[in-house]
Length: 380
Image (tube, rainbow, N blue to C red):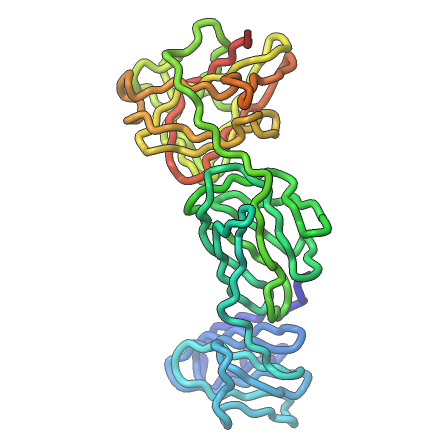
């Protein structure tokens, strides 16, 4: 649980000595400026921005015992004082932008510097997260050096770590569901990871003095699927036009009629990665096993996409590495037909019931991908 805090933001261009926040008389300043004050369980955090030296006074219910600058260094003796009669602490601040903490319980504990959290794949370190502490939380950030894959994430805590107090992100993906285990918290679903992906863990907790996370582990790793190319689209399948997507999120794709010999005369372009997703409705006439193909174009070296069918990763192809095709589809050679399902034992055909199904494609690493169509073919 985050501690209760009250934030009061004040901007003044008033005569010297004028009391701000008159109803509560919480803060006063000797010079015009911008001031903000936030109350925490054992301290107040004051921000001051003034063009001249200023004395700022903040009302407190308990006597002030310590005062430090934003870097954790104690304020110079005599630059702050507790006025028992007035029930306030007064601080003499030079001109400029300053942030000061004043506490009334115990002594100031400076957040630790230089703490890191390892990201492990088996016994190999594939990332190092650097910890930054704030009053209300800790955030550890870094980048991965791991295979392109889907993986479950295990967070090993140093103590008790409730799921609601933690957020873990890799690139644009956030883990939202966790399973409590004896050795830590395990993500309920698979997370796309790839080399260079920004990775972060944020843990809520007031005035932390050490990392609540001992390590992060990648488990149940499923390497990205590199779909084989075919000579052309199967002639006897169910065609799903890419431009006929039925839902979209985290971005906006374009539809073009200027690319080379597209199915239906149009295609999807400007389909960006890193969180942008498109969804199509598949109307299956009869239950059975189906192969899935697509016609795609990419001028970049590759484009990573997750594929989900009815909310679940595509079997054996939950993360697909779409290859570069040499262009964006303005000529016949810039389009490639790729088999996404039914290409072999590790990439089985789709087991589909008759009726409607949802196919979703989500960009992972920022690259674009142009799409002409998908084709479902009864698997033989």
